Image (cartoon, rainbow, N blue to C red; front, top):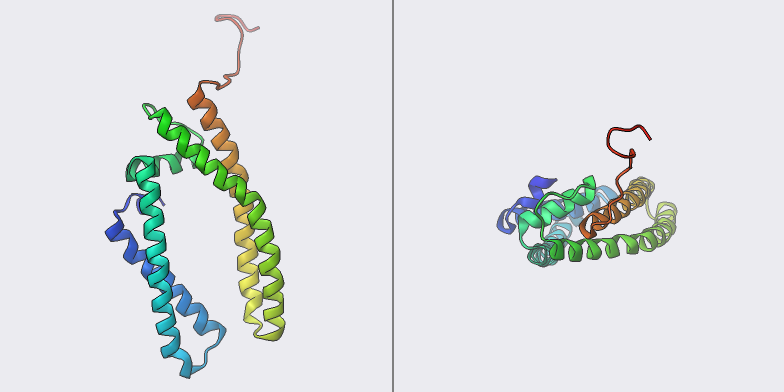
Length: 182
């Protein structure tokens, strides 16, 4: 994942375009394999891929610029995953970015369960009314939501630890005075 986070935008955005467009087209074909619909699906996938690539391009560029560059943005995400602050970081930039990341993860604690219930209800309706393929989509979506809940808890715990380290309030387990077992 770090390899993708460090890629320059001109190399990353074509990959995003292909993945998003291909996924949109593939899901459309699998959910309704009518042969006469392929041209329309391809055009819709092209438009969707263009719009999402532009959106993600601006979002990625903004976050990278705000974090101080591609390397810093990747280092911050790596630190959120691992819970370790590298030596020699800019405390102001890192604190600001970690606070922003913590806010996004806190929002996930509310948004993900609401989204799971709403999409779950829609997918059940679609599975009963449109196609049984929606049961598979529902299972994949609920698995992604469960992972997101787990990842959110882990990231929030790590972010609190990182912010404590940046503020100098890490608590190191004490073993007593040097040379004693007290």
